[in-house]
Structures are given as structure tokens and as C-alpha cells.
Figure (cartoon, rainbow, N blue to C red):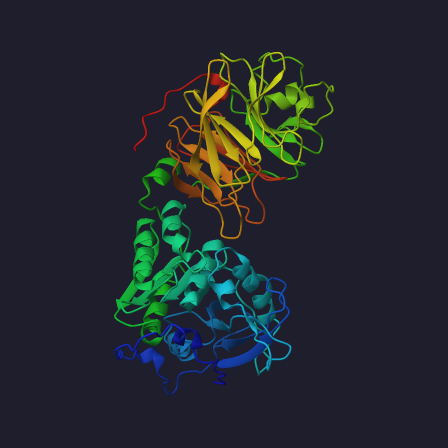
Length: 578
């Protein structure tokens, strides 16, 4: 074996504030070199052409087992902070004993922007930025830059390196910040990594890692298997307590139905215990391979009341022009407003919805929620007649029947920005609120006595009481939404209620589902991660299909619950749990 070792784990030493008792652990046989066991090769490379982390330079090592055959793509293990845990020796032994598949190991150091003159200036150290931060930047760096670079390399005997693209064949791990980085990579791209080894993981508030236990409990479970290690003498500093945070992670993962294993010890913030149990962790992570890692049903009753087993998002269609809003008619047919053509179409037949100049109900064709776009085209900067009541809007809904009008939100970057309008039966607009941060989606509560408004430049859902004349009162920031670590807001757009009063909001984290008193209790990840959703509504014959749009795409998912057709009249939902 050609072994090029990385620098010692100096990042651990920076936290060694006090002398810790000596740690002695049994040595697993798989951590020891054995005569006759085929030995892999370790190759050393550098990488300095990152687009995602510009200007950075780093090293990485590639372990290639002797049994590797380039005709078959190999399984993958990606580790942060270079070579740790005696991994090449462990892999030699476990691959030989068939306790893990033929696996290529990739060991990456964090990037740094090197100073032009290191005698007078310091490098910029990117470790915390890359490892501690939530979001998909680092996993994209691995998938789009490092793994393709690895596949350009060859072994010393000329074998090309071919890596499996199947998530079931790929694992990732690390220590401390490298551990939360590994978990984040799998969390953000479960379709790329399904197995995680986490040692003394930094699930504390350095850059938001402390949010994971809460998010794990709310998200629809993902197909990830995770092994956790930590010790009771781990750090307890300004950012939090590591050991407590790791126990919170284990509790949350168990609650959410994940395949999770853990070993707690009495060690400090170092790699001693993790190195001792690394073979055990690898055996467990690869147990039953090649059977796939699957997402399991968890204990979140809110999710279980919503989701149907075996149902997931399906693509309805692509190439819809530029979808601004979705709406339904009383039969559950779905329509969309195309900003490119400024027309409203049936989403299945692409048949244009006929426009009229009255507020009369044509329930066989008109779409609740986008009805006004078909009826009064000039309201949305369209090609209709240019009246003095022209506004630029984001969304609209039909008001309760006794009001005989529509609510609409004014679009950002226009004279109508931040405004909420009520159009009466004569098409005359009245400003019923202003000063909002780009109000976007609108929904009535099931009993039609209150109005929800998403504020797309924040993480709030506002609520108002509706007065008999359609004006609004009792305004409150009612719904609190999660937002990504990499964004300044949750960017909520479309919003709808089901018949039990749950509130569904399309956001940049997915569909966040709130209870009636404004708490997010469930999050449904969306099938597109590269863009933000533009609208959301219920439809289908039984109103149990949830539709979500992007710019050109529309997806749907069948649920247990039934949504509301606002034009069908009020429904009194059950009283919420306080």
C-alpha cells in the first residue's frame, strides 16, 4: 500500500482546553494490518479550480482497494479532514472479509485561500464555512467538482477510477465539523449519499447545526442510515454542548424513523474513540448491502395524518411557459396562469380558459384562485382593457360569498408593492392593507372568517379577520416558517388549507405544513432543489392531490387529506390542540 498521510487532526487540538483522562479502547482486528490481506493503494492529489469555493486550494487522497475492477463502478466513502480512523487498513480488512463492498475512499482536506506572501499574511481558512454551514454548497462541491476530478485519475498500474452514482453505494463521514458536514451532504442530497458516519459531530450553533434535531422531526423521512459516536467529556463551550447535541440528534433520528446506531463513551473531543469503533461502524453501515437504504415511517403524527404510504411527487408536465399561479375549479381541474402568454390554461389539456368581463360564476370552467386573471386581465399587467383600476399583482382569491369580490396581493417592484387589495363586484379596488414585504399567496381559513397572506420577503404568514364589508382587522404575524441557512427569508409563495385547517405553504425548504395556531409541524421536501416553487393548490376529483409549480414544471402528490375549494362555502374545522 502506498500511503500518504494527511496532517494530524490539528482542528481537534484547538478545542483541547483542559487535560482529559487517558482513553484506552480495545483494538478491533480490522484496524490491524494482517499478512495475506490484499492491500490497497493510496494516491495523493491537489485541487485548486473550484467554482463553488473560488480561490481555494486543498489536498485529497484516494484509496483504491486491490480488488477494484474498473469494469464495475466502485462504492464510495468520502471523508473530510483527510485520512482518519486508520481507514485504509480497515477497508483492506473489511473488503477482504466481505463485510463491506469494494469501496474507493476519498479523503479531502478543507480548502484555504493561500496568502501570496505567507511571511506577512495568513491564509484564509475555509473549514468552518465549508463544514459547519447548512445548505448544499459543499455537497455540490463534492458531486460537481471533486468526484469528477477523482474519475480523471488512474492507479499506479493504469486502472481508471470509476465511481458508482447510486446513493445506495455511497457513504460519507467525518469528525467534529466534518461530521455535521457529512450529515448535511446526505441530508441535502439523499439521492447521492445514503450512509453517514458521524464522530463527535458539531450539531451545535456554530453555523446553524443546532437546527437539525428540530428539522429531522418535522421533515418527511429521507433514505439515510447514520452511525453516531461521541463521548461524555466532549466540548461544552459557547456554541453548545457536543455530547448533549449528539444525543438530541439520536433522539430525533429515532423519532423520525431513521436507521440509526450510536456508541457513546467517556472520551473527549478527539478521534481516539472513533478510530477504535470505526470498523464496527462500517460493518453496521454496510449491513445487508446491496439491499437499499429506505425511508421509514416515523412517529410524527402530523406527517402520518397527511402522507399516503408509497405515494411521492410525480411530474405532471414540463414546458408550461412561465407558471405564475395554480388554481382549481369546483371539479378539481387544475389551471395555471402563464406569464409568457398572459393567459390561463387547463393544465392537462393546455386549453385556454375563456375570459369574460363580469364577476359572474362559471363554475364549470372558472378556476378559483386565478379566476380574476381570466376575468379581468388588466389587473395583472395583461393585454386586457386599460382601466383606471389597473394593478400589478401576485395572487388573488375569491372572497367569502357574502362579500362578492376578490382579494389580491400587489407585486413587488411596482407601485402596488406591499399592498393588499379587495376588488368589489364592480371591479373597483380598495386597499385593505399596505406595508407588507412582497405579499404573495392568499388563502381563506376553512370557515372563511379569516385570511392568510404569505409575505415572500420574510418567514412570516400573516392572518387577518374578515369584516362583513370585506375589510380586514386583527392583523398578526401568525405563521412562523423555517428558512434555509443560505437565504434571508423562507420565500413563501402559494398557500392553501385542507379541510381540517392545516395550512400548506410553498417555500424554499419545501411545503411547510402548519397547524391552525401557526406552528410548522411537517415539511415535505420538493422534487426540485435548484429552484423555488411559484404556487401551490389542491385539486383532483376528491381534492386530495397537492399540486406545486415551478417556472415551467408542475408536480403533484396524492395525500390522505382533502383540500378546500374556496368557492364551495365555509367548513368549520376541528378545534386545534393548543
